[in-house]
Length: 344
Image (tube, rainbow, N blue to C red; front, top):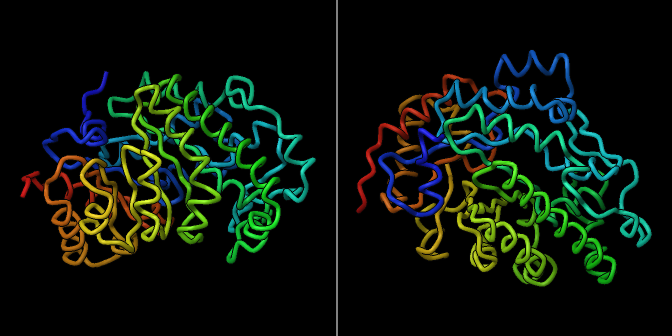
């Protein structure tokens, strides 16, 4: 049973006593305990061992006092579950043994059935539901972001290969996006059915597209994902990096919560998309390294821009960095929770 439902209430734009706060990548290398676990297990091995994965997920909730847990996993997990050969390479990121180049490779991707492809993820969620007294967030990568890695073969600076495929081979692009959007929808629904209260779509790299390209090549496939999850009753969060120019286009797909990076002022973003959305964000992650008085001022500025309106969830504008300290993140949580919500 939830003892703290601030986060869930904020997702639904309901009144809260304090602004809820959690952090993307809130479990990771900044934690000594996590580093010790990584000495024995790779990231993907952790994801595939439910007891260990649950322990890693719980660590920041207990250490930081955040208002939500996010399942420890990786956006590559469902693709690995389908048998695609992808490894998470240290200091590089996801690397595919056979990048997508031709139609036969897309046709060979099997349908996604969560209980067969990723049973360990669902078991981790079930364990966490027994342990947690705050809401649990599940997640998946967005189709464009997954396609970017699959076509480029690894992280990219210019997205040349994936954009070229998108522009030049529209039929292949459609096939790939249809497969990925069906997989993402099925995966997120399965996480909700296993016990997640909320899900977040990390379409991290759509900010590299123009608005026209997003609306043409990506947005048509997003509607079905959001609709499938919302049919379960679970709120949906959308997050992308450098997406200030896409906010209203993304809002059109209907997420409950719009995640913001730090490049767009929160009040301006909220004005753009309108009051019908909750908003998540958006402290510049580097501010966590600032002197105490600067950090406090920047946290206060984000809260001031939210103006006490129902539906603000405090978060960083991107994920926690490995160089951050537990104490600095604890301080952010304390600053947010000490701020009484007073609508202006």
